[in-house]
Amino acid sequence: MLLDGKTAVITGASRGIGLGIAEAFLAQGAKVAICGTSEGGVSKAKEHLQGKYPNGEILALAADVSKSGDCDNFIAEVIKHFGRIDILVNNAGITRDTLLMRMSESDWDAVLSVNLKGAFLMSKAAVKQMIKQRSGSIINMSSVVGQSGNAAQANYSASKAGLIGLTKSLAKELASRNIRVNAIAPGFVKTEMTEVLKEELRDAILQSIPLKRFAEVKDIADAAVFLASENAGYITGQVLAVNGGLYI
View (cartoon, rainbow, N blue to C red):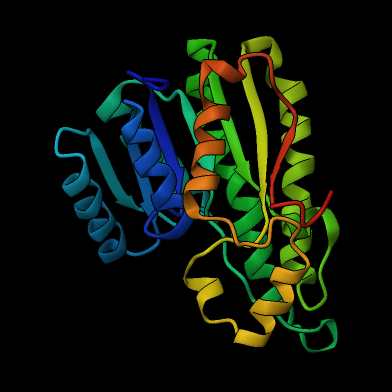
């Protein structure tokens, strides 16, 4: 198995892409620590994961990645429980979509605080352990709109573009410690967020995707498994676009 014996931390893993990545990592032999903002959400996610992988080692805690204290405490619990951290997936993210003229300062701050600052805080907390081990892999979840931009998503696009800059900077900073840092930029993925789109909008989006389908969560999870594994041992500072050709 590609991740046998590895310990992985995944933020925003109560549902959607984060939960799918946790499943994929468990299937590949990893121990996983997941977090989300809701106690009920992470408990439900752990129950789901334990049902699929009864022998899997799973730690699930509530944590707000926009707060440094929560990040530090979560990482401390992971190290206490598992003894090490091999993989960090900064997946936690929110949206507050609206046109620039209608976007409030609080909408801007909330999205940047969770999506970008959260990745900074969690990376800072986890890297201390990775440096001690002289090994690690960090994966930041960017987005196709972080590469292309999108109307009515100035805050979200800025946060995801910022993650690309963070990825490249940390890759250069941490390479000497044998810590790789990469990003995944998904396109449209079949999740609760896309299920609520109106049919005509979904059809218009599909027409713009050369592969003519939305990504499955598994498509993103498989990319995360690859970047976390030794198969990507000479890859750092890169953005792996998983978007069906939407942005080339």
